[in-house]
Length: 183
Image (cartoon, rainbow, N blue to C red; front, top):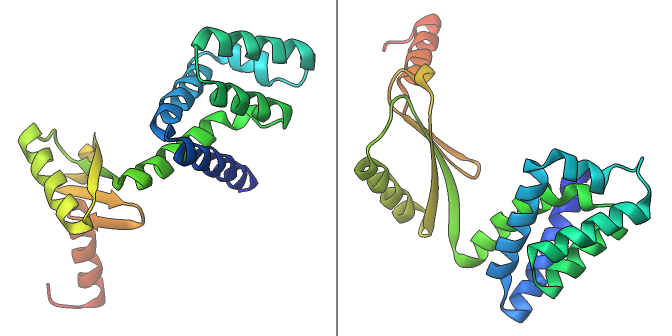
């Protein structure tokens, strides 16, 4: 829990800087690139984050990586600050919060869609438009499949879950029958 609060705080601070200087989108890409590199290259992450290694050596590795990534001065300073404060290991969590905050700034809401079978592009587009109309914002939709749903779809927008799956309907029907209600 503390880790998430720390990540949120750093993400908000970076977004404030981005809003002030107009480079919020650039910082989004740079932070996402760095966090993606750290997640993909576990040896690099260990070389930078593992406290068993000498601090000066870890900082030198980070400086070298930052130079090779060719990122902005603000992002370089931000990553070095994370290192100095012992928070560089939170880069992935900070990136996740930053992405959400930057989306909010642009008026974009993220949603997840789970279906039992693969949906056509046209169907996904119609669902995206309907969700945009319902929320009043542009919707970024992540589509996944789960055959356990049997049929239908489950949509999640923040805390709101719209469950139209056959599986849930069958479970609800079973509970109603157990209680002796008419179906």
